[in-house]
Amino acid sequence: MTRVVVIGAGAAGTMAAIFAAEAGADTVLLERTRDGGRKILISGGGRCNVLPARLDETRFVSDSSPNSLRKIVRSWPLAEQVAFFEQQVGIPLVEEAESVKLFPASHKARDVRDGLLDLARMRGAEVRMDTMITDVVPSGTGWSVRVGNGPSLDADAVIIACGGLSVPMTGSDGAGLRILAKLGHTMHATYAALTPLVSSPAPYAGLSGVSLPVTLTATGHGRVAAATGGFLFTHVGYSGPAVLDVSHVAVRSRAEHQDPPACVTVRWAPLDDAGWAERLKPRGARTVLGALRMELPDRLAAALLQTANVAPDRMLSELPRDERLRLTEMLVRGVLPWNGDEGYKKAEVTGGGVSLAEIDPRSMESRRCPGLYICGEVLDAFGPIGGYNFLWAWVTGRAAGLGAARSR
Image (cartoon, rainbow, N blue to C red; front, top):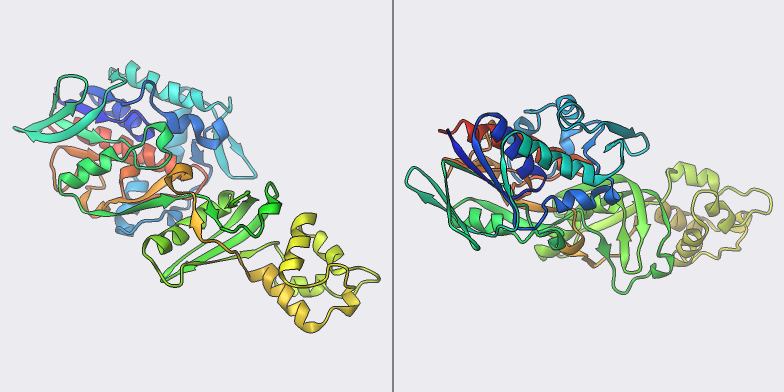
């Protein structure tokens, strides 16, 4: 019987253990924390956005081969993943129509984490918590997993699924990335992805707590990302799904010391130039502030007028052409001031990691180290907010589990 050791009881690792055990492997799942799956528990505000309701594979970000990424994502169709959770894990999923996301019907992330771990045990996997892995080294025809607080484990196949660097409070410390780099894998530079942006000084600190849907575009030295969705002013900058989804372009521009850094522009309302031209036409005794308040929160409307140097009490009938054009430019393509980010502490996921060129997309086996399988966040790919990164974990974890079980 093939002996498989899975390192990391998060989303990808637990899924890998489920499928390795189901395929008949003697499977041991190792986890450094006392309970595992902590990112599952905090995801979606404690509700766990299990999957996107609809999948657009072009929204994944990677410096690796798009063809390899597509092969991996398509290896387990979305409909089959939904059926797996509902029929095998026993967790009905419901769609949140506004966000096009799938959540457990209970809206409890703990049900997802516990359901997956219970299924792994039910399939025959041994789960060991509080187990610190110090190294993974070749040993004869297999592998030796070095454990800091116990004897080493010998295995025919090892699955690295211990996450990246994001949200270190959950136990992510980059150990998997370090082990894989030491074993000679090509590593794309890692960076905090899906993280809030900051501005110091913060010109809009007074708007902290104000939220609205916007369209953001980040552009920097050949990279472009655009997103439409929720936007939230914080006391130090900006957050919300739209900000997180374009943040990687900004983060990488700073990490690479690009001059100038990435430019982030915002369309504050659905209106385009023509729409605002119509909205700003003279209408009785309406003021400029009154016109903006029809589309934007009051405090934001006032702040944008101040930034544009347009008097809020100016009558629309008295608004000069240059001020109208300047205001429209800010409303449709306003530059969002930023000069930093909140890093891995607040990042939803780690960008960069092991090049997909060094992975067999059918089995997730390393092309450099036969018998070593790689899945989840340590790989060079991530998706937008909305269940995409769990989908990546489920897909790669399943493929790695099945591949490892058949490795002997």
